[in-house]
Amino acid sequence: MPLILLTGYPSSGLTYRAQQLITHFTTNNLASIQHISDDTLNISRSAYDTARTEKDARAVLSSAVKRHLGRETLVVCDAMNYIKGFRYQMWCEAKAARTTCCVVHVAVSPEQATSLHQQRIEQSEDPKQTYDPTTFANLISRYEEPSASARWDSPLFTLPYSDAHPPYEAISAALFASSSKARSKKGIINITNPISSTATSTTTTSPSSTVPPPPPPSIIIKPHLATVPPKAMSSDALYILERATSTVVQTILTYLSTAGISECSGETITFSLPTTTTTTTPAATTTTNPSPATAAADDDDDDDDDTHTHPLPPPQTIHLPPTGTLSVAHLQRLKRQFVSLYRSRGMGVGAAAAAAASSSPAGVGGGELSEERVVAGFVAFLESGFHSDS
Image 1 (cartoon, rainbow, N blue to C red):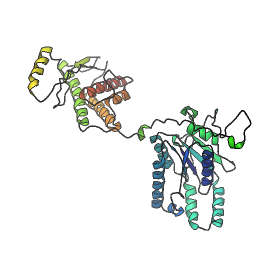
Image 2 (cartoon, rainbow, N blue to C red; image 1 turned 180 degrees about the vertical axis):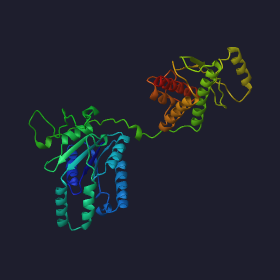
Image 3 (tube, rainbow, N blue to C red; image 1 turned 90 degrees about the vertical axis):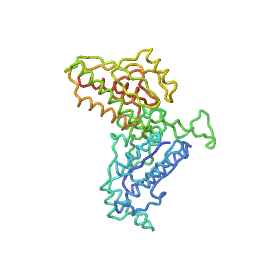
C-alpha cells in the first residue's frame, strides 16, 4: 500500500495532520494503516542534539518504514523528514515495494513554529517532549523544503497552517488512482474524478445505513532500475562473457590484417562457432562451417566418450562501418563498455545489446547465458557503436 511522507518544521503540527489523515482513511475504510513517528518508535527529542544520535534515529525510522511497506498497509511516516536525501531514500523504498508515495508538506513559518514550540514548553510536564533551544534553531536552519519539480517529492501537497483539513480527495486520487497518469510533470494532481469520502445515494437513508466505498484499486508500480536487485549470475558467466567478446574482437582484427584493409568500406564478416561439448567452452572462429560428413564423423567418434556434442550454431555476421578505421583501442573500448554494461546491470546479453541498439537480432533475448548468445549480443552492440561513430 502507499506511503504518505509528512515533512515540516519541528512543532509545526505534523502529528495533528497525520491523525487527520489516519482518521479519514480509517473512517472510509480505505486501507489498513500503520502510523510511524518518533513517539511510536520511542525516539527522544534529544536524539537530534548530535549528528551521531540523529543518524541512528533516522536509521530506526527508515527501517520501520521499510519493514511495514507492502501491498496491504498504508504507511504514514509522521516525522520532520527535513533532509531531501532521506525523502529520496524513502521514495526509493516505495518504488522497490511497487507502491505509490506522496509528500505532505505541513507549511508554517519559522516564527509560527517557534511560537508553537514555546507553547509546548510551557504546557508540557515532560521535558523529553520538547527540543533544546539550540537544537530547535539548528533544525529550522537545516530544513530543506520539498519541491514539486523533484521526482522524490512528487506528488507534493502543501498544507498551510490556516487550512482546517488536508486535501483528502486529492491525496486519495494520487495514492489509489487506477492510472499513474493522474500525476503531471510538476507533481500537480488531476482530480477530475476524485474518490469521494462519503457514500452517495439516490434515496434518503439514515446515517447508520451509509455504506463506505470499497477500497480503490492500487497502482502497480514498476520498480526503478536503481531499486531492482541485480540478478544472480552463474559462476562461469563472466568467463563466457570475456571469452566470447575477445573472440569477436580477434575475428575482426584477423580479418582486417589478412585482407590488408586500412580503412573500412562496409565489409561483411561471416564466421561460425564450432560445435561445443559439455566439458569445454565454445569459441568463435573465422573458419567456415564443417561439412556434414565431417560433422557426422565427429559425432561417431564422440559416441564412446563421456562428452556430448551440441548442434552446430548458425553463422554470425558482422557489418563493418562504411567509413573510418577500426583500431585495437577502439574495439577494446567497445568491448569494455559491453562487459561493464552487463556486469553493472546483472542482465542478459539481449538486454545489454538492446540498450545500445534499437532492435536486437534474432536469437538475442532472455534465457540462459551461452557463448552463442553473447556473440550475437556483442555483434549487435558493436554494429550500433559503429553506426553512432560514423
